[in-house]
Amino acid sequence: MNVTYACSQCQALNRDEVGPTSERLVCSGCGAEIKPPSDAWEGQHLTRCLVCPSTDLFVRKAFPQRLGVAIVILGFVASCIAWYDYRTELTFGILFATALIDVVLYVLVGNLLMCYRCQAQYRGVEGLERHGGFELETHERHRQQLARLAEVDKRQRSLSQS
Ligand SMILES: [Zn+2]
Ligand SMILES: [Zn+2]
Image 1: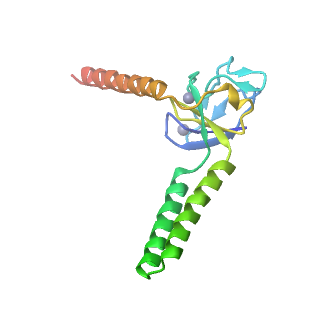
Image 2: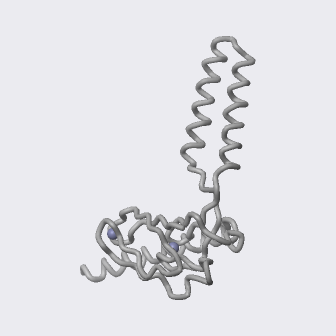
């Protein structure tokens, strides 16, 4: 399985093969090392994020959202042209086809595991069903925590300046 994460030091996007025997992650941008927590693995199963190391992970579709939106827009534009051309059947044919493509793609693509806190993405994960889907409540908790940390950081900085 592999992990995609943004380095907390230099924001570079990294993708690395990881497994229970991985001892560290090294950033390709700045060489910063991350030591995964020792209790991150239960056999082959990932129990917490290797990067941040939060235990809150959720399952989502590995479907690139931009691709989905692009298909819908393309279908809409094509159907408008057909409509302008007074080709009613073709118009609805195009709309139906693009909706169908979206649905088929959605079913075909696999799932990935994502960290609420640092947005690291894990692909090719075994035992995905052990993790739940997205929960707004957990997401909100992490978002507020991040906002609080940023606030503390700001205050400390202004204190050290005065
Ligand atoms: Zn880095
Ligand atoms: Zn994380």
